[in-house]
Length: 398
Image (cartoon, rainbow, N blue to C red; front, side, top):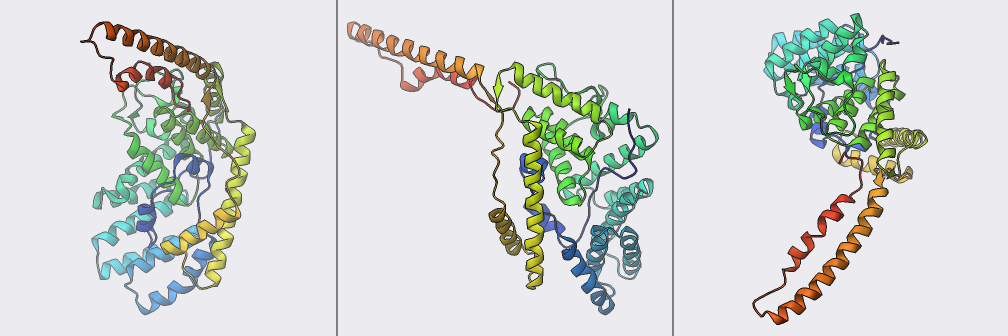
C-alpha cells in the first residue's frame, strides 16, 4: 500500500545572511549527513532576529537583506504565513529600489515558503522565475528543487509514483547501467528513456545541501541519497541513507526495505563482516540527536552571552564544545571482507614464498649467466600486489 503525505518531503533553497557562509562550509561527509550529526540553529537564534529586525526595518525600510533575514526567521520558527507577508513587503521595497540579486532572492524565498505551506504549484512558479533570473544560484541546486517540487505535485495525484520512481528518475534522469553490479538498483529508479545521466557529484551536492541547509529533513531526500550512494558503488552509505528514509516513514517504505534486504544479502553472501545492524543504526541516531540537542544548548548559552553563532569562529567553538560533551562513542566502520581476506592472505604468503624461491633460483642462475639481472624490486612487487588488492574491504561493490 502506498501512502500519500500531507506535507512536502523536501525543503529547498532559502536565502538569508547565513546562506553564503553555509554554502562555503559545504556539505558534511556522507555518514555524518545520513546519520544526522550536524548542527541546526535553535529557535532562540531566529527569535532574536524576530525581536531585532522590525526595528531595523522601521529605520531603514529599503534594507532588502533584512527582509530576507526576518522572513527566514519566521519560516524557521514555523510561521510561514508571516514569512510570506514579509516577502510582500520586500516586493514593495523592490518596486521602490530594484536590485537584480534581491529580485532573484525574493522569488526564491517566496517560492520556497509557498511550497512549504503546501502551495506547491504557486511555489514552483516563483522558483522558476528565480531560476530565469539566476540559473546558477546555489551552485545550480535550484534546478533539483524544481524537479523535487514537480515530483511532489505528481505523487499528490498519483501516489503509486512513490513506488515507481525517486524524484530524480521521475524528472527523467537516468542512472548508469547496472549490468556489472552484484546488486541492482531498484525498479523505481529507472527510465530507459531518461533525458540525462545522473552527474553524481552535482546531484549529491544539491540533494545534500537541500537536506543540510533547507531546515527540514524529508524522507525523499534520504531515499535519493540512498540511490545515489548505490549508484556510486557505496552500499554502506546507501544502507544508512535508506534506513533514515525508513525512519522518516517514506511512503514507499516497502520498496526501500526490499532494497535494504538486498544489500544485506549481498554482504552476507560475499563474506563481509562488521555488517551494520538496525540496533547500530538506532544507537547512531540517538547519539546524533543527543549531539544536535547539545549543540542547541551550547548555542543558546552563547546567545545569552551576547555572541553571534552565525560568525564562523563562534560557530566553530560551539561545535567543538558539542563534540566534547557528546564524543563519538560508536565506530561506524564499513563492512569488510572475511572469506576473501583469509584467502588473500594465504595466497599472498604463498606467492611471496614462490617469489623468494624464484629470486634465489634467479640469483643462482644469474651467477652462471653474467648478463642476467634480477628484476627491480618494484617489478617483483607488482606480481604480488593484485592479490593484496583483492583483499580490500569496504562496502563498495567489487
